[in-house]
Length: 296
Image 1: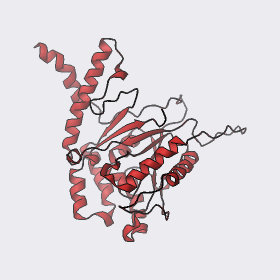
Image 2 (image 1 turned 180 degrees about the vertical axis):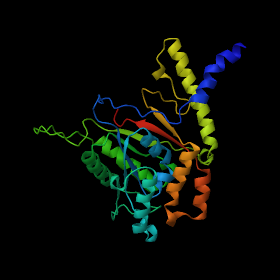
Image 3 (image 1 turned 180 degrees about the horizontal axis):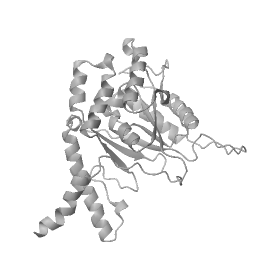
Image 4 (image 1 turned 90 degrees about the horizontal axis):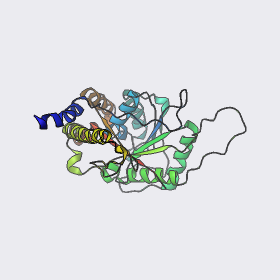
């Protein structure tokens, strides 16, 4: 009886845990102030649905403004122009208008599984988009790039270099508001997992909901005893909310269907092994975003 009483909050946490965690409010966000404007920076068309679908759908559900920046049009097989159209259609399925999606065809940023891209070039491109759009949050790959694809890894390296060199624009004498950021944007990296964990598909949502329920239960206990819950290390990473927050987005079966429909827009890429991927990939169901604080 005592054991059942002690574990009741845990089971309630598991049953009623929201599918997505609220995106942290901006520290400068006041009533009527700016809302989250997230820039998803990826390497190729189809990355947005193969890897970042739960995040994009979760952000749209929270009424965040989402932009997509794709550094290459995936022209390795001469299908770049077709893939650009597929990309816009895929983002539309995910709830992002085509005028908020940009895809590049730069001679030094061509789709190539054997080639690393220049970090300084990527940093400069990201800088232009952040300043022009007033981006508050950047979402991209982590240093392992999910699949260790050199283009994915280079994307992360370029974004990190942007943050390392970031400086706010000088104050303007003009009374008109600027579209640029009023403080440095936040950087969120998609957490790469082991090959075994990568292909757990729907089952990854079950295991992760258990972990999230345990973490929520631990925080509840800390609040009850009057201790600082933000100093609690994550079961998954060992980091605390203070040092490196970890956001989790879980697709519902319906959202998985939306992500799958987005992938179906990439008709040039729907070969047999990709059908296996979208069936069993964890990233079609789960995204974990870790905040990276460059230079902190």
